[in-house]
Image 1 (tube, helix red, strand yellow):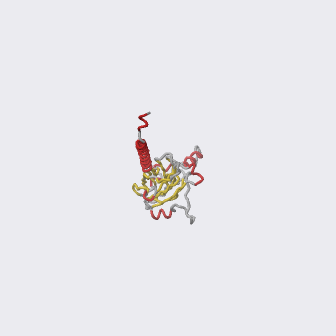
Image 2: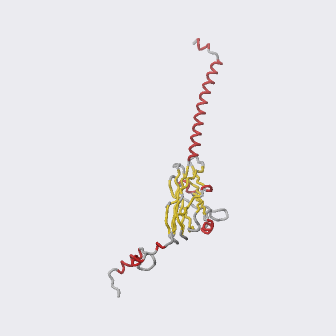
Length: 237
């Protein structure tokens, strides 16, 4: 007890300050580390956008539907805004339509125009864009993980060797909404597609197969089979 009384107050203050400094330094280091981890996590958040099917073969005047798929690396954050820009060979293909999936809608400008290229604009430039958003009353059911954003239909108009259908990433955007709630842009990783447009001759039956084209429409399909069934066993003069 006597020894304790000999300890001067300024020594106690010094010990307290040292203890306080050590604890503060430890807390600061933990906060810096967490901040660094959070920043690295945000920087690494990616959205892989792909076109399915990735390879296709069309005939002239044949339509093909393609799906725009999104796979987010941040599985717990819902995606509520997507803008895509796509280019194609306008000499071989024509855009027919763009349709959002059930999760999204295409918003309108204040002038009433939709935020999407028209087929005429796309077929003139060989490029099209579309903006897709989750309606505000459906934020709770906004998609996450791997899902379909939209579909678009292209029509073969002229034969060509393998031609690309490519994302233009420098003008695209994918935005997620986390539980804070905070918004953040995801880094886009594109997976493009390729298409070959044939001359269209393959769509007509060869002379050896012409007998199967019962209704002579140039295509052997279910209609020919139905005609065959309805007339099977009948005799014709």
